Amino acid sequence: MHKYIIMGPQGCGKGTQAKLLADSFDLFHISVGEIFRWNIKVHTKLAARIKRIMATGRLVPDEIVEEIVNRRLTEHDWNYGFILDGFPRNAAQAEFFLESYDVDAVIHIDVPDSVVRQRVMARRQCSQCGLDYNLMHHRPVVETVCDVCGGTLVTRDDDSEEALAKRLHDYNTKTLPTLELFQKKELVIHADGTQSIEHVQNEIREKLNLPPD
Ligand code: AMP
Image 1: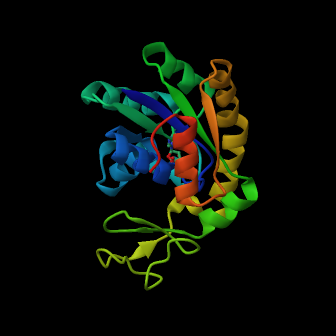
Image 2: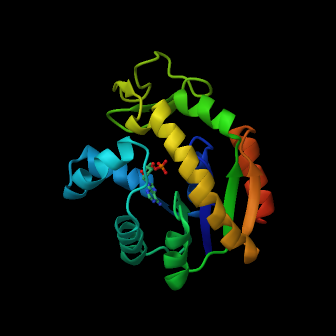
């Protein structure tokens, strides 16, 4: 069984890399951001509490995040393991996690802030099926239309310049320090997130002693 955490700034490709690993090794993929976006899309009670926080690029309060992660991890039968994407994002969340669970490795995808800015500003998402696009690397045939379902492509609320600056600041001051906590336990592997999707995936697999893609 493999249990991983994947960390990196927004736009580093952690969601894409997590999905590739999850598909190949039958891992249960838990993306806290995706769970929140789903709640907003279907107007759950939780949505009212998190919508504004997310749109301004702030972190959702720890107790909500911890409840979501805990529920997912206790609800599911993750026989083959899991990959946690976007969690933990601060020391309190890391400590909460380590009280009840353990991990085999923490995958850190490293990307400089300047590249994050370029990528995030080019990001689009289908308002209907949720598919992600990037006007730099994964262009739709028509700039505003989803290739798969024909839905309208939109910019995520939290991909504005202001929200991005807030998120980068939080990442550098709150999330990166938690990496040190895992580093002390010798659990962290680093991958160069400026490379192609395939290259990053293979670098991760090599460092985790997993078979190549
Ligand atoms: P992501 O898709 O991982 O970039 O997450 C999108 C947004 O969801 C973040 O900007 C936060 O507002 C919220 N979020 C996701 N994961 C967490 C977390 N572990 N702690 C607090 N807020 C989170």
